Image (cartoon, one colour):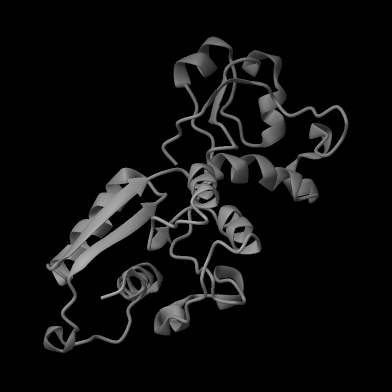
Length: 223
């Protein structure tokens, strides 16, 4: 069995799990697969391990080998291995890296029968079916309660709240070059101009940005 065939079946399983119930297939009618499936996995490792475990329960003759990399790191690796691809499938992560990968010819089209399970195909898949959304996540601020109480501050409710002098050098975020989640967090307020976002003073796109400075941008993010 060629690796691509295994990859196609894994995509079907993942999309069905993430996007909603698909038509059931009797276990006796499944093709007997055997071999190794190489997975490039971007979500937290607990998800990677869980998907591997569940897939191998359905296809016990298949061994899933995965490497966990954040989306920026994953994209870099795919670029470096363009002439000799090492993975059958790339699963999970923000879509910006998948859009870049498609533009660079690093992804292969797949017309999954489970694409019909997507809640909103216009928002959740590529027009050419080179990628499809499998989950939706939320981003927010996590605050240190002791720090807020010490400085008589309320938890930040907008990006502009982070411009308070007390937060200077106290903010921590993953490095946007390696973490697609961090990139999404930083680029989102710059892509909205609605007053409800309260971002006009931040100077997105200006020569002198007023984005708050961070104490740490980890190069080894967990997402």
